[in-house]
Image 1 (spheres, rainbow, N blue to C red):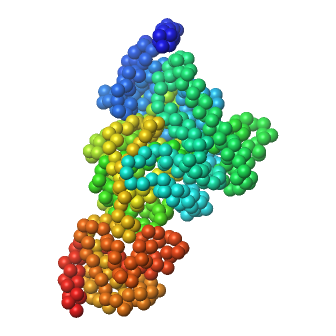
Image 2 (spheres, helix red, strand yellow):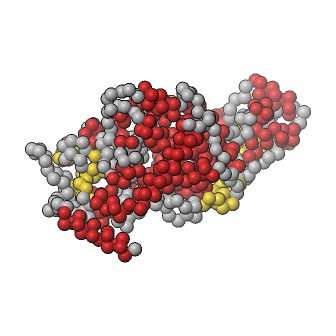
Image 3 (cartoon, rainbow, N blue to C red):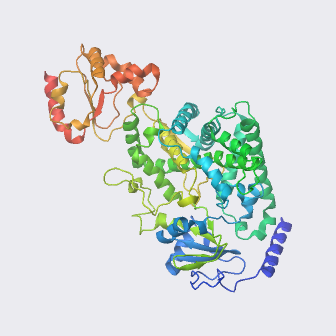
Length: 612
């Protein structure tokens, strides 16, 4: 231990002596540009301004503080690395969109080089935007951004649906550590969708090790390290990086044995794995190394995308934590989900219709405020009227855009309604960039949103959740590699799962009194039944008097019509199953929610009907 400390001190001292200090300047002006350099704090020797980012819940909060003193474009030296921070809509748009070709490179963080086979070129998110990246992005986008109701969309929907019964069978009411199970489920979905391999059992040791290693790497990648800005410290990180590279090697072994060379692989099949390998085969004799995709490069791209399941599971866990700590938000979500799905299985197409669920997803990302991957200039350029030299690391301060009172009311509060407009539709402000924007925006953002919201919907259709996790790291997506426990509470049986905001009236739509009961109520509260449904209902219940229930606070009772009890239960449990199809279609119109304004008139008619 003492030897390590002495070695570290020796390295620090040596670097301090040898490194040229910039006499207080964060950036050095080059060329004959007449533009000024951005203002910024005077750096300390060796550390620069790294100390300003310490001891904060979200490190970028330091940048927001500097904004008050130096303005929206700030130059800052972190360690020995020259940086610029952008924190207003205009300069961010200029750098990421208008002048993207000047700002589309990535920093040369040595730690990431080592994690990706010795070159950041192998990393989708951390490579420069070169010709090879354009080739890879074109291939991957076909699968990571499935068009609505396309073949890819339906394949993802089916893959998700196939995994959910196994996922739900692995959890029950009580205190549950959801992280391992959710990680395995998400990994199964990604592996099956992108590579067409069958799901793996949750007790498969090799598979569990594969998922666990991805989780550890995700945590490491999400954590900023001092060595990123002071590369001279890498010898101190030797032991850690050796362990990290061993995790990467274990993942590669699993991918080669079980996916690339696995028995299930079908060459030429329409999936991402085959698209990458076909490109490798096509480029085998290509002389232009700038666009040539090698097998090693394809495998890194594949592993990068498959590892995206970690983003889904971690975001979902964060979302569930916020939901569990805000009962009123959970109530609203459950009402909207029950209204949308009405007892059926969660499907991607339906999830996109639940606006408040999407709003909850965005609100989770806003409060998490995960750092946008920094950019780097590839030439001398300018932004916002300031000169920015080549090889300057550029930070997008999303902490300011996520927490500033200039943009949000009560920004520290978890409130998904801030993303809902007066018409109940989603609104996403231009300054809100959870996945960045421009050519370097997240390539898997659509997959992340679809699977994460669908997972959340699936859990809330079965359980109420409570969470007492006091704090989690912010400024990153990753959660620590440790248990993430929730209290799961069984909701009432599926036939009784509806928890309406207003009293609910259950009635027989085929009974002659129906038209009298509806009378002057708002007809928009009801969905019209087709003739086949009306006919089926009339033959089922015409011989029995109608039974009505008004339920002000409790869930809809199971027993609605004596002759329909079993059918209702089947319909509520799973209206999508073939064996329940007839019951579902027959009884789909038996329950309707009546608005509160209609209740006085409905009550009067109800009393009149019962007297008859």
